[in-house]
Image 1 (cartoon, rainbow, N blue to C red):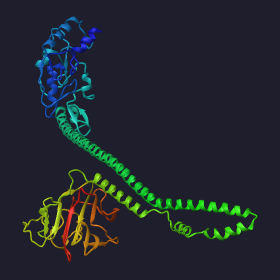
Image 2: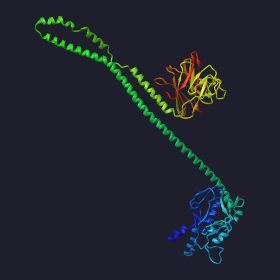
Image 3: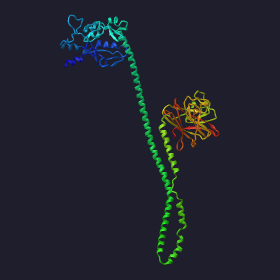
Image 4: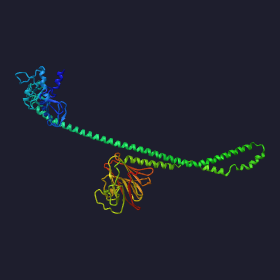
Length: 528
């Protein structure tokens, strides 16, 4: 058993024989020098070299180190072992004494010992194999000649005589040449497979990055939603307390006159009870004189003027609450909570909308905060550029190409204006550059105190009467929806456009004058 283990440790993984001149690769495995050289030769041109034992890959031809400690062990081991001649394979060229063969040459049809293997031809035509390999399997079954050629038409191995007989006229080549071409094909396949593997690895890395980004976005959104609902609960609790307090105040206010009336009625009730007792006693008296005297003096006071006044107050008392005031308080509070929710979800840090003065027309003044713009009759003499609007219009520097976003404005009472969103490719001059007068912009418009929405020159007038000067725009890019809201109490939905957005969207504002003066607009990103 020990001998078998030792034999296994001293066996080359390539030729499966006891080591001959063993060398060590960088991966730590040992192999015969002549074996590894032959293996590495077959790898030339493929761009990668492989250890025959562990299949570790090397980008360059690996350096081999002679294993000095292992070099003498095979000889010492063999000297202690009885001569094994089970196979009967001996070196063809050792004629004086039989020497076990370590390899066989299929071309020479000869067995080689270590010494003759070193001097044997290294030509590719000489194919070396294990000495136990049957040469008969490498010979033509008809002509008993070594199979030296490959027939491409029949996909079979043939000898030299076969090429002139049954394979005459076929495309045949030497095995080595056919093998070389096959290896070239395999190398091309290998390159494609390596390329596809690299592409797949890149796709995996890209998907993993997307997964990380998705998790980060989900984590951020989860945090914002948790914070939002915490704030909503706090605001709802405060609103509930405020509404209930208003109800309690109204109940208390309405209860005071009721309490006074109840007290007066209690007094009258006691007075009536006394009179009832007096009358009952008189009814039981047999002497007519006291009865007649009481009727004359007391019965006239049974229903006095105060009693009539109390009856009038009781009829006029209405136990009602001012439900309109309670509803207004509730709606106002809910509107504030909803606006805060829009801001908490859709207004992300770093996405605050700012105006791009480089696009502003020359009759617009953009303040230094880049959030306020107003019309002026004084020409601003800005340089003429392809980005600048000729008329009274300006784009935002912020753009949106994904996600959901909400932004709000405050408008002047005077002047005419338009607000909305636009592609950056919108025209810069002429009627087609106006918000809503093209297919590249969507807008809410005010013209001579009339309100409408526009897109593609199609105008839709709003039937709802506008009651305030605050408006919001909500964008859901992926869903293809753009909505306009009036930010009053409560918030009112004005209109929703549906489209397939093909470019990033910028906020866009247009202001000019009417008979009452020029218009101004202020971005209120963080105020609603």
